[in-house]
Length: 368
Image (cartoon, rainbow, N blue to C red; front, side, top):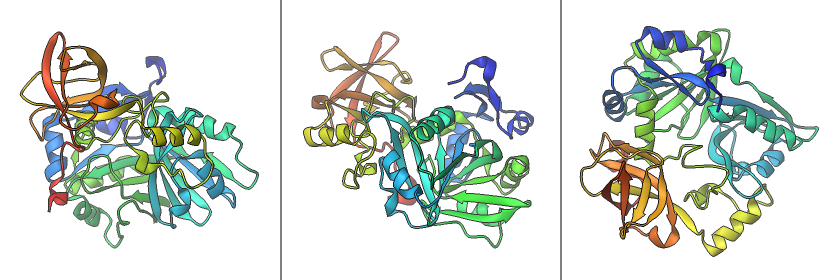
């Protein structure tokens, strides 16, 4: 993470200021934490539609006859399962199976891939991958500075897209589509970090403000990092650097579904295979207050029922949807069973919590 002397600006920064956003440093970037209120913005995404600036995230392009084989060695998931137009969640791992970064890789053609990585990890990811010697038949480039990005999320996201981009079709879930705009190209991805329907819209950096304003005019409410964090945590979506780290593996994080141990060798595979066979010593669990209490936050101590400190929260928030404290923490496997009673220490006060099933919240569109 960059220090304050090297804080970067997204192509949308001046627009955020004009819209009255409160700006804060995040992952080396000056970003909006909120415009109106976190509760208001969170509610807009759960009930209608919101828009987030994600221009700080990175975009890598990988092309060439050897691209698929190289990416399958570099990443934990099986890239070979992707057809052109499809994407998947995956991990860049170190040799011990720890998570350097979680990312999404899209196959845009037979030998071409579009990868979206976390903002604070752009340089580290690029250097790690480049230093693992792409073959001569692979071209690997960092296009992060060329794109502005925005995430449009909520039950009304598809209708909003239809207003702004008439005649264009959204890709299916976890898909990617491209179409010409402004003398360049737009890339539309159908993933999300909120649990609601939605899409990511990447366009040339110079036209980012205009597109952001178009989506606002079509009904999308500007939302900041505060709502993004509460929305993702209600879904138990991990935050790299908090819930994921180089010291933790995807198996410990309960994300083994996104690891393909049968595809052949990849960086970190040996450790993950052993963990899967033996079971990890610790697991990332979802903790929910059993009663009202002070908002939980990352790094607050987690105690067992006897009051012994066993861990700390990797993430925590007062859930706007549930009206109670929620969080995630790595705990000993014996205490990771559903229904286990634990305590969260908030500045010397202890609040009862219970290990619950992930996610904390199920969006309305998925409840039927």
